[in-house]
Image (tube, rainbow, N blue to C red):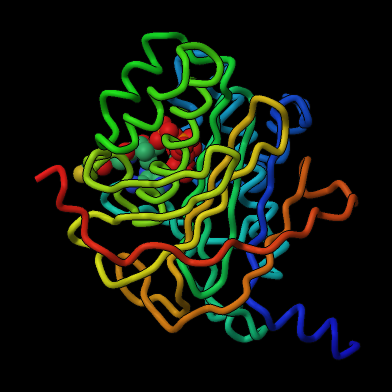
Length: 287
Ligand SMILES: CC(C)(COP(=O)(O)OP(=O)(O)OC[C@H]1O[C@@H](n2cnc3c(N)ncnc32)[C@H](O)[C@@H]1OP(=O)(O)O)[C@@H](O)C(=O)NCCC(=O)NCCS
């Protein structure tokens, strides 16, 4: 291995997968799921009322197992996935993984509008979200606008009603979901208790966390990898998490590998850097 490749491997990195449902046939998804999913996942799949929802579940969880297997160097069916009381899935560290020199992996999944978005990271927590802009009706955007913090609402409503306002609302929303999912809280955290300050053209300028998460910076990535499809990623600016929210030493430069399509495609990932950390203050304006 060349020294530059060693440096790339050693450096903190995040692997992202954006996979459209129609990239995997229902037959293939069902076949892979039969071999890879555990008993609980199969039970969950069996409970969906509508076939389209069952298929969405099979595709998403086939993706999760395949991508984690690649990252961990284990077989898909060997991976043990458990869920927190709030429903957040975790990969249980195994002695096999440690024996092969593997470091703790965290992952997070989102699915919406026919897309699956998966983030995988080592030593840290990760949260991800995907949303499709075209699917939002006026009512859904109004609901988002009502749920977010006053400064975010002011920024969103400065844009004219219509596509520009919808885009701003969704940009804020995916970031909020990614942050709360990294923390494992889902919608259990009031979405008006933390604030993103966004650049009009893209990117997070500032982040004011909720009162229970001060003194730690976060890194956020927002992208539109496919026109009309917004994704966001949140990771705490540190390594070696050992608590519910993920703490640790400063991470330095983090490389992101963004993959399109399912993990058996051989196309090279798009490589980018995770933006600089933001945040650390307390948000008291809403109190
Ligand atoms: C997590 C949550 C925000 C999902 O939002 P969503 O926009 O509808 O869905 P997304 O597609 O972005 O994400 C769904 C995925 O997030 C993951 N997820 C579920 N709960 C999660 C949590 N608490 N934190 C992080 N990720 C979670 C799962 O992988 C889920 O997919 P799956 O059910 O197919 O495995 C929402 O389900 C939620 O708030 N759950 C928490 C519920 C809760 O607090 N329960 C308390 C019971 S005591």
